[in-house]
Length: 138
Image (tube, rainbow, N blue to C red):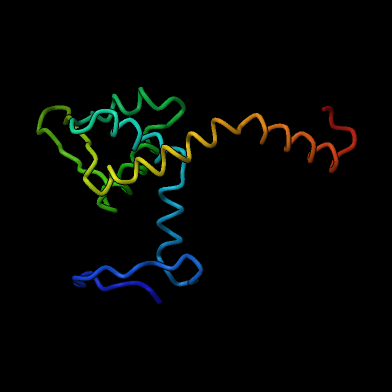
């Protein structure tokens, strides 16, 4: 297995093809649309912070709960820093860590690829769906 203890000084590279490697769970977390959107919004604000409500406004369709879960995971993974102002109600701010900033480049490439090829993917879906169900319209 390619994991390391919490006290290890030297990181050990993960192995996606090892069933026990936590790389698989990490990819599940960072590969979501909500993570990609949150990282993009925070990267645009870097090195500044973005409040929770502003993140939610800038991420159409995200529920409060899903945004909370996404941000919790990003904080837990060391990609985002959370700062709470002790006001009533509390003001919660988020910003990318250096590690989180390094994630923006590959996520941006993936977002660009998806946007550039969405029409081709839609066409392939339509063709394949029609082959499965001959009554489907093209």
